[in-house]
Amino acid sequence: MKILTTQIGGLLQRADSNNEETVEETARLLAQATIGEGRVIFVGFDEMEAVGVNALFAAEPFRGAVRYEEGMEFHSADRVWLFARSATDTRALELARMLAEKFIPFAVVASEKATEDNDLADLAYTYMAIGVMKGILPGEDLGSRIVQPHLLAALFLYEAVKMAYDEMVNEED
Image (cartoon, rainbow, N blue to C red; front, side, top):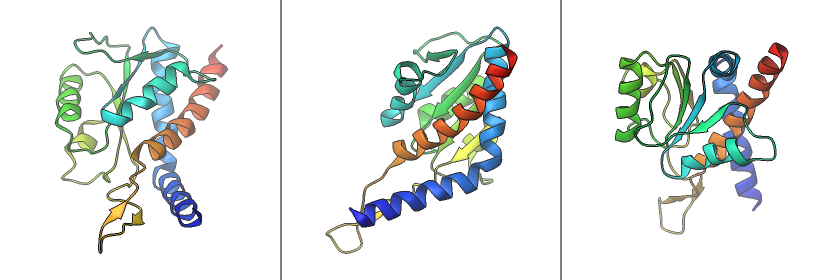
């Protein structure tokens, strides 16, 4: 338990330091929808869908949040926040390309850093890397790794953005 706590603490500290500026930029991007006539549409793939569920049903819901549904129409005032375990997720890339073609600004949270080879990061208005590339603890088998807390790191970044977002949106009221 102590090793897990240490590793999770390190993961969250890295997520914080690697995304410090992007948290504020993402909050500003999403606030544009809420202050205007748009929606903040949460899209999550696989376990990352839980971030959108949290945004809608948490004790402190994300103001203006809407859950993505297949075939949903996007409007120019909308902003999209996309969560994927990996930047190579074909569903995430397909949606990102469609949003870019329609000039709908969107933010992304995924594992990989924003590099030249990261198409998802290249398409996104803002991109946050959670940094979970493999398990964070050694497994029982030699060389194996276990515990991949993609969702935990994504929820951490969500909460950081939400704090800045709430401050921006509440100033406009």
